Length: 332
Image (cartoon, helix red, strand yellow):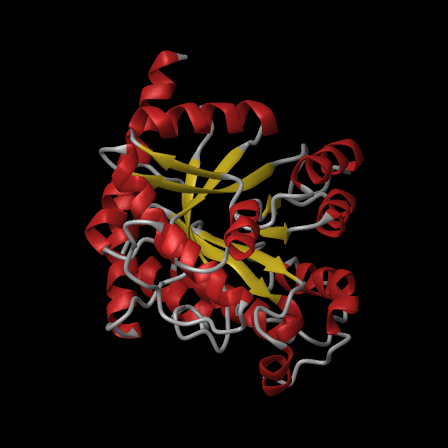
């Protein structure tokens, strides 16, 4: 059975704050380590009052410092927001502090709206330079070359694993050309998943980092003791996506008894499509969904995410998911 990992946004729920979000994330990471998840990744978003992981490298250091064996990383760093040298230094520092446990997933989206992107001093055309910035980042984290004038200190020679993140065919093509592992954001962008995987596998070129293609796919998992309770938990992320599409993102809202009471039918249909790859239900329901998804994608690894309002319910969902994976391993 393939490894399961966790993508966390350090969600800030209604009535709470970032400090509590970080404590909750660390609690989840520590339990995930015991539950045998492989990785715990955090994502860069800016100007989002419901997401606390904007200073992604700092939060990674906090999580890595509170765990012992689980890999911790970025899923991802939005590279056009930053100088490759700064990211190489940051992740070189993380790797030096927590050797052999740090991953660097990078994407080319701004992780924000354009007004916020300008506040980040991001050039609107910066995404066009993404392939060149990946090469620069690889060079800064690779072995020092003769007469190399600029070095990442720390960073040079540490070879922090770089992943390409994507929600379109562009990322698949780039990851294949550079021989890097590829993570597809199917948990919110389902449309190009299968075509992207096909392109990545067909065009993959071996590299010093990776000999064969390695594809991770994102999936929402909302597991509870009953289908009804899981569907109720799921309404928080449905509200979040409706609000995002309205241009009014905010803190994660409590669940509703019936999502039909929130938003229009067209809004709910859009969100249902975006969250197509979501396994919501009791253990038996989630297991059937995960088995079908893994069989369909032939993924090498699953990146599981769940924006659940109640922290205890969120822990329980990830615990159920981990137990399901162990059961599937035993059945093989």
